[in-house]
Amino acid sequence: MNPVLLTQLTDGIYTITINRPDKLNALNQDVLKALDTELDNIYSNPDIRTVIITGSGAKAFVAGADISEFNQMNAEQSRQMAKRGQDLFFRIERSPKPIVACVNGFALGGGCELAMSCHFRIASPNAIFGQPEVNLGILPGYGGTQRLVQLIGKGRAMELLMSGQNIDANTALQYGLVNYVVPQEELLNKAIAILTVIQTKAPLAVAGCITSANAVFDESKNGYEVEVDAFGNCFNTEDRFEGVTAFLEKRKPAFKGK
Ligand code: COA
Image (tube, rainbow, N blue to C red; front, side, top):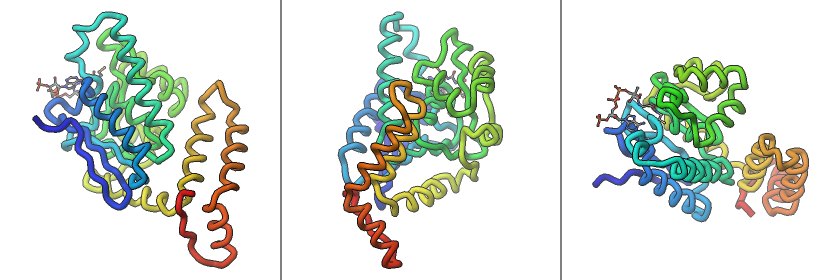
C-alpha cells in the first residue's frame, strides 16, 4: 500500500505531501494520524528548520475530510473527530517552525482548514478554496469557522460558510487568503525561496513572531504582553548577541537557534 504521506528533507526544508491522489488527498483517519506523527517529528527534529505541506498530483491539495467515513459515525464520535482534528491543526498553527501550505488544487472543507492552519499559503492558478460542508448537512469542524473569519473577515467568511460556494485562486489572493498565486510548476520553488530567506534568520526570533502573531486570535492572552515576553526572551539568546554584533561589525550573522 502507498504511504499516505510522502516526506523529504532538503536543506532544512521538510516537505510533506499528502498522498491519496485517487481520492483527491481526502483526510481520512490514517492521514490525520500520520500528520500527527509528523508534527512530533517537526517539533523534535533539529534538522527540520521549516516545513511545506502540499498535495500529491496536479488536481488537489486536499478535497476535504474523507466523506466516506461520515455515515458510520454517531454525534459523539463526530465531536471527537472534530476535537482531534482541531488539536492537530493547533499543533500546525502553534509550531515554532514556519509551516507553509502549497495549495496545488482543490482545498475544500478540511483541506481549506488545513491550509488555513499553516502560517501562510501559496496557491497555483487551479486552486479552489471553500467550505462546502453545508452541502452535506454539516459545518466545518476543524477550525474553519474561526480561521476563515480571521483570514478574510467576517462578512466574506459568513457568505462562503453559509452558501458553501467556492472561490478561485485569484479571488483567494484578492481576499488575502493566499500570499501568492504562481504557476503550478513554480509552487514549491516559490515556497522554498521564501523559506530559504526565513532560514537565514534567528530561529528563536522567528518562533517568537509566530507565538506573538497567533496571540492576536487567542482571547486568553494579551498579545502585547506575549510580544513583550517573546522580545525579552530573545534578548537572552546567543543569536541576539550574534545578530547585533554582526550588524555592528558589518557582516552577515550566523545564527544557531540558541
Ligand atoms: N472524501 C472522500 N472521497 C473524496 C472526497 C472527500 N472529501 N473528495 C473527492 N473524493 C473522491 C471521490 O469520491 C472520487 O473517488 P472514486 O473515484 O473512488 O469515486 C475521487 O475522489 C475523485 O473525485 P471526483 O468527485 O470524481 O472528482 P471531480 O473532479 O468530479 O470533483 C470535487 C472534484 C472536489 C469537486 C469533488 O470530488 C467534491 O465535491 N469533493 C467533496 C468536497 C467536499 O465536500 N469536501 C468537504 C468534505 S467535509
